[in-house]
Image (cartoon, rainbow, N blue to C red; front, side, top):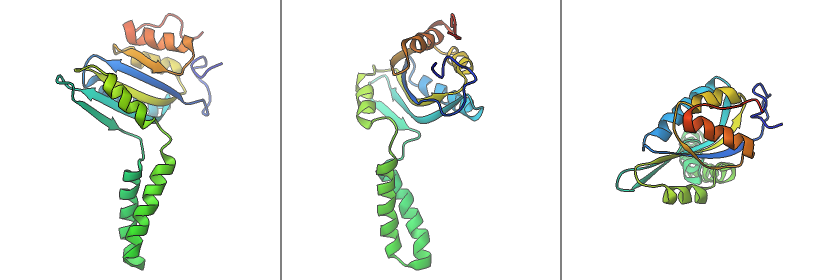
Length: 180
């Protein structure tokens, strides 16, 4: 039984990959904001999320919302180093930045950067895509939310039945049988 087959399944479900393409450049951001609200309500858990938007000229904008990269880790570590330098001396800044970079490299367990870049190249001008690493705890609530939008499942590692349910919700907003 997958986490989609049991709408009240307990935490600890598997993380799944989902890529959804939309016909408007701002739509993926709008959907992500609403999914974040569902996360606050306990319907799902976002492990990583990336929004890719292409303007009319085809210029891609990639926004990684959850990913801790080595650069972000170094910046965070640098700030911790500044704080520590007040207590123990200036060498703490360099040590903090190095430790932060290492931390960012080690915890980057989200969506593969190469795959994100490939999706950005594939996406047509004037469209957007939402790439998610997600754990679903309330399938019915997620399908209802996605049913408010028109989109296309580009890639997913959910089982075929779940993929069809997602496609139905994003296609016309209805799901024929969400409990099977």
